[in-house]
View (cartoon, rainbow, N blue to C red):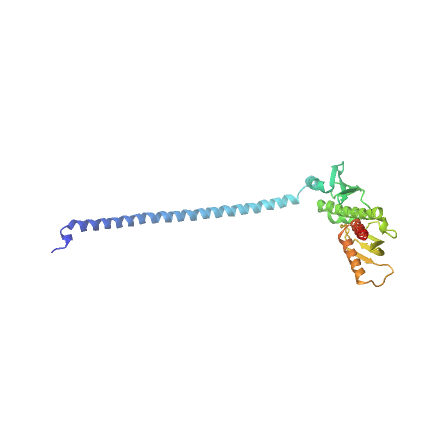
Length: 295
């Protein structure tokens, strides 16, 4: 029996021709696509070269302009220098004004004067408004202090030398820290003398800056009165609490462990609490002891 394809001779031929035509068409398409890709790559390379040339031109132009700026700066006339200095002064004034606005709620304020600005320092301690001070600044080159009410023992000149010409904000804030700490120390000592005089067995000794205090005081413990002597040193003039505290018992060389513990606790109180608050706690402790004896 003959194979089936001999009965249909045209079918194999037809299929073979179609397949051959498809292959030819695919090859033709690839031949047309390949030149298109190569053309795109060539176009991109051309564009890259053009951009590189533009970059080199821009770099050269920047160098030329920088050279012209340097040359013109070297030949600048005095009138332009004066304008430049005026701009610097205006910038300094804007900085001062911005500082006053920023620190308004922390105790700094100011007003314009014919020379520049007058800055006011409002001090406070524990929410109590205390003394006020001022510094009259002349906006000039260099900045300078025309007049002020800062106490002589506050290192105003030192603070100004360190910060006035370079950082006005830091100058004002540093000065405010010194003033606020000073009035805080003064307020505590005044409160001790006025409200807790009964605890003192002698005068309160303090220097003008208020950074060294010494006093003798008495505390009642179990219906007995004991005397202590305290020396408070404020080495950090921007702080209202002492950095060094010494508490001793006058006339007593050696103390029992019990009273040594009390002495150490007093030193800790003086280091961590304002002076008048420490004596307020002594008053409360005495009241509690009295009530326990009555009961």
